[in-house]
Length: 407
Image (tube, rainbow, N blue to C red; front, side):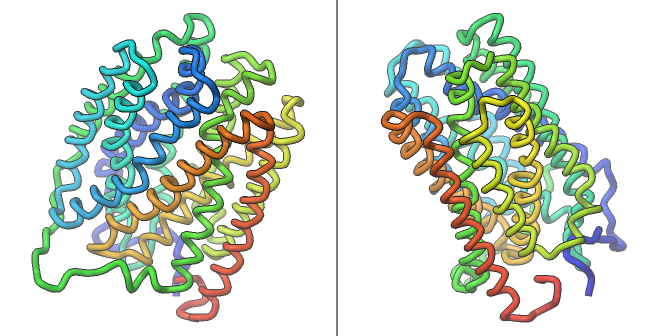
């Protein structure tokens, strides 16, 4: 039987022209994320908020990922109108972002961020579900084509994280709201380029349920691995810019360090079809969690040395890019057909929603008492737990012995 990462070939092979709109969406979405997530904490700091309040406000994004993606995923599975829903979410997020121009206190900013994130948090699960369907066939998940699309997201992130860093270094953070509106406007343009293909909507009495899938030990350990792996990553997503700022790095250098990690993931996405067949899905999950342990150790105790921090950022190729592709491949196997949207939504909720809330709130509390470096010290422990869960997941997969390749 073929390896799950071998390029899928079929009589209905898709052309690159069918993938261009998805590449544009990925590029514009992550271009928005590339400036928003790294520099939101710095903008909030300039507004005079404490680390605890910054943690609370950044946790709003993660909080919306707990329930919102599943609701949108259920709706997209039920109606089959994924593209229509993506367009609605992009437009609503753009309108809400205009609220960042209004000078307000903590409550106002929290409400604006909440309304924005309710809509943007649903976009990637729905587009990933549509893309996974497009690049999968009866012969498996086409990691080559998926990587070619996903690398455009990394390129979008790379450009804005570097350019925005240089801009904010020289112009200050007051233009942050304008960047938010402009990037979401670009996202809206790309969403309307997507072909409006409607999947068949089913309204029969017997509806597929995710519960039988979630009862499988291999699925439970998979989500446990993702939970603790991403929880380890939250220190990077939420506090990394503040951490570097406290260490004396300039905003330009902060942008450069973010760019290094994204450049590493671009190289990986471009070449991943060569390397992924070397190991099974479960083995890659364990490798990625082990790399996370190393990355957090270096970030905690050696961040004052630029070259060590650069190496730690290069590990992003494993701790994010490889781990993400492996997760999408596993989800496409475990949640097929009409479960696809809900599987992606569960991945967003369990993998990024709950860990994001816990990481942002817990990290803020830890930072106030012990300093920002304590966030990364704690992440070492959660990364070790992720390794244990990945090992148990591999054991669960081996025990069912469906195929020798974790199919």
